[in-house]
Length: 249
Image 1: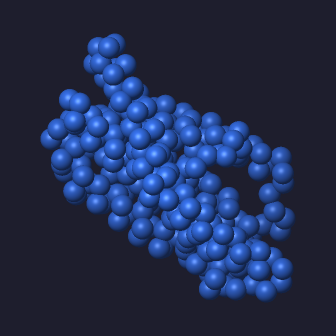
Image 2 (image 1 turned 135 degrees about the horizontal axis):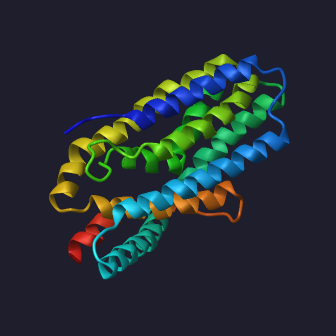
């Protein structure tokens, strides 16, 4: 089995490049440029989400319908599991802490150490990062490599955010790239070493990919600001999907 952490590397690289650009830029990105990147990243998230769904299903038309139905059911059950576990409330608490640090720095009392911590929390707790780390740890089709494109999208997002953070907190905030790499790398390797052998043995990799694709499309709704979505609550769907497919196999 080939091990790789391409997505985690790209995410960390994006943060570092964003930090360098932020230090070099004299003016922040214009509103028009920000809207362009938001639209492009939202479209890319939908594209890669649908690609994951496509990769996760196969067989006859009825088999594909069944697999899509099971993935959709897994997302629904995963959402309610996340609600019972209060995952979104935990995510909100982390976000509020990071927001308080950013607000205090913008009011004229910068905290470099706090800024580093806030960046680590924001970049690690993002649902797209957790989703991307899992899909990067599972094979795509007949290839041994993982689907790292979701983390590539997140790399651009985090890099754009870092262009602003370094102006508020200074260059130490860009060092958050290293704990972010370690965190995402740990999730990806855990999926490769422990989850992947069982999933491959029972033919369940596709179920995880299909569910992940649907969750990625939900994340795009937040990027486009279409509606507020409790994204963290959807994450258990990645575990529910293979269990449901295995049970109903």
